[in-house]
Structure formats: C-alpha cells, structure tokens
Length: 398
Image 1 (cartoon, rainbow, N blue to C red):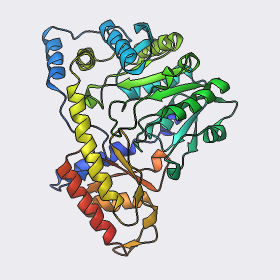
Image 2 (spheres, rainbow, N blue to C red; image 1 turned 30 degrees about the horizontal axis):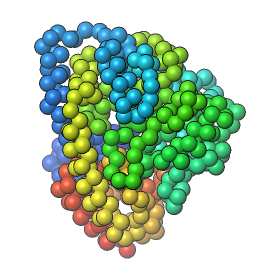
Image 3 (cartoon, helix red, strand yellow; image 1 turned 90 degrees about the vertical axis):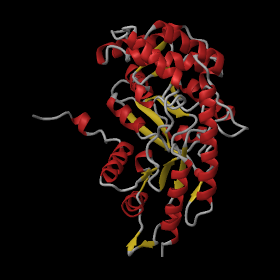
Image 4 (cartoon, helix red, strand yellow; image 1 turned 90 degrees about the horizontal axis):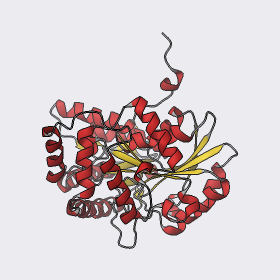
C-alpha cells in the first residue's frame, strides 16, 4: 500500500524524540538531566485537580459542544477582555485539545493549496510542519541575534509574495524568550493590514514574563483593522502546569471561528469534557499559583543565564519570558572533543547526551542550526548540575 506523501513529508518532533532517548537512558539506570521538554515541572494546582475530580464524580463524562462548553468559552472571552483588551463574543471562542490543536485548526481554516505562510526564525518547530499539513508552504524569514531577534518590516518584505496568506508570530517566544514590544507589533500589524494577510498570534507563554520593563501585548488589541484579521491562540498548558490536560483555545473573527468548530467536530468531536472543567477552574480561580510559578522560573532564568553567559565559546541573549535559553554554539566549531572535531549543534547535542548525560535540543528544526535550546523548566538543583557538566564539556575542548 502506498502511504500518504503529505504524511511522509512531515518530520517527527525532534524535542519529543530527544526526550524519548533520555527516557531510555534513564531506564538503564543513568542519571540524565533534561533541558529538552517544554513543560513546567510543577504539579497542576490543587483547586484545578479538584475541579476535574468533581466533574468525574458528577458524571460530566459525555460529549460536549464541538467548540467547548459555553461556560468555559465565556470565561475565556472574559479573560481576553480583562487581561488583553480584546472584545470577543463567546461564539468567537473555540476550545480545542491544546494550543497545538488550535493552531492547526486555524491554519486549516484559512489556507488553500499553494498559499504561503511567513514564519520568522527562530520558530517553534511545529509551525512549518503544520503549514504543510494544512496544504500551505512555509516561508522562513530570519531574524538577527545581534538585533535581539526582532521581526522587522524588512524581514517581512523578504518573505512576502502574492501567495502570502498569513504570518505566524509568537510572544513571548519559544525558543528565544523574547517579548515583542508595542512598536514591533504595530510594525507587523501595519504590514498585515497593508498586504491584506492574516496574523496567527501564539500567546501561550503570555503569563511567563520576567523583565520589569516588558509586558504582554496582544497584537489584536492594537486596532480594529488588525483585530479583524488576527487569530489569537492561547491555552492553559504553560501558565497552569497543565500540559497533559490538553486544553487550548482560539479567538477569531466569527466566520473563522465557525469553520474551526466545524472542522473540529469531524476530527475530535470535542475537547475532553473533564479537562474543560479543570480549565474553567484554572481561568476563573485564584491566580496566585501562576505568580508563584513565574517567580520560580524567573530565579531559574537568572541563574542559567548568568552561568551560560560566562562560559567559553558560546553566546546567548537574556530571555524576557517563556522558559528557554537559546544558545549559539558556533564558536565551538573547529574545536575538538576527545578527538572529534565539532561541526554542528546537532553533533554537540548528541555528544552532550552520550558523554555528559545532558539532554538538550539542537535547533536546526527551529530554523537555527547553530543553536541549542535549554529549557529551564526543571529544578534549580538539576540546572546547577547540568550547567556544571556543560561548562566541563566546554573547558575540555581543544
């Protein structure tokens, strides 16, 4: 039987494959320190877990509406109004099985075969594959580390053609941790309005910002013109330590939201009923748990950045949000480790796992083959030990 050419053309997630390999080494009794997976290491807060248990005990285990239960959609609309200055009716909110699901729904709702989608690099590795799955063509434009990975109009112009349908932005960024300011967002918004293209705004890390001079701004809040062409993506995974619960959401112009709901009804019927009740408790309940986690991430950010910035051969920028450090290893190229000449970040990542038992994410699939992403969503003890091993590796280079 001939398999789907589209499916065969999709790359597996490199972050999940690295995590899987680290798990195999752990099963062999090896103490692997992982900086690979992008999920909080905290437990889901108790009041959220209780809401799920209550839902089970109440028999809330049947199908829901395809776009999610009304009370959760209304809670999301209220959150977007109060936190982001966005005015949506609940019918414009679509609850999905994670923000990743919301993203593919959005792309499938707007893309026709041959349409192009601009993706600024570095980018989260799934964006390009999702565009391909939706029948579009990803067009990668590159941002400069020396300019703080800012997405400029000049970069957008390089990626634009008469086939361009949308641009994907993420703030705070995975993998750089950069937070876009109002000036940058207005430049992107003006470009999108002028060229009549859509913006898909991935805001999943919005509550995890550490720099006092930075705040999260939703691009759709800038004016009506950009509001009318923006699909805002968010969820509960990162802010509430709910990655496995799989609840994300999209806020979109009514015709797009309707299409997303319709497609979802045929693909998954609806989001998990119990997880929806948990997400409702997360959004409507006390938010001190989010702030507690944010403060812990901030301490880890400061520590890992201070360690890496003082190591030889590598360079990085201080992340303003999310929970990743994006490190350029090109300064190690040409050096040797135990007789092996270093030539790529992928090679370095393999050596670190095999020799130092550190799991990291080489970023060729993020559009930046000279970089490695380090997730600091792990304990300060693990970060300390891992940084000791990384520094040891770098000092052993000849």
